[in-house]
Image 1 (tube, helix red, strand yellow):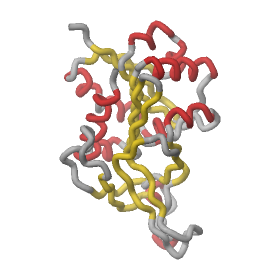
Image 2 (cartoon, rainbow, N blue to C red; image 1 turned 135 degrees about the vertical axis):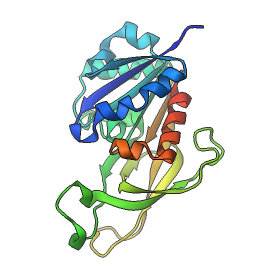
Image 3 (tube, rainbow, N blue to C red; image 1 turned 180 degrees about the horizontal axis):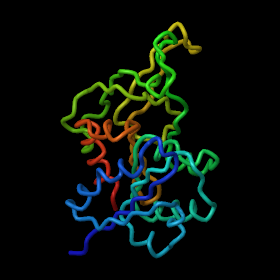
Length: 229
């Protein structure tokens, strides 16, 4: 039996620790029959031969840029059946200047609300809030058997369209120091079908510590398998 092929593409902003974060999932992929190739730049997407034989792309590239040719290679591979998956800014805050990429993924990071002004320390922890992840589709193979759970990390506010299939959400409350006027619900976990390909996105994953949360890790591991060709 020929092994499946997984391609890990990582880079971009170092604050999301793309190397340490993706390394967490290499043993899982290998244990599930994947040959894993790791690339530190998204120009690998221009290699038609590599993309044609890739069953799953795990991307962790926050912000950064993508060339027209690299995006076309990624898009065409997904349409042809290659799976595309990732978490947090590595997939939902990539390539902000490419509107076609934003359409491909279906949801884009907008912000992560901060603590109350008098509780802010002036560092990254200002954005760590305790929030609930609500499982909204309990019948899907990615979420089956999981209950709602709490995390203390960045709570992503996501702009999205109706073509995504939402599996879990979170609600941003209204605080006196916020400019919005009613609670906002954002997707936390979603899937998307694009051509023959499957896309999986989870917004938790700011650090390896978040990825090691048992609920988050279960969602991502199942999502990787679901997305694969």
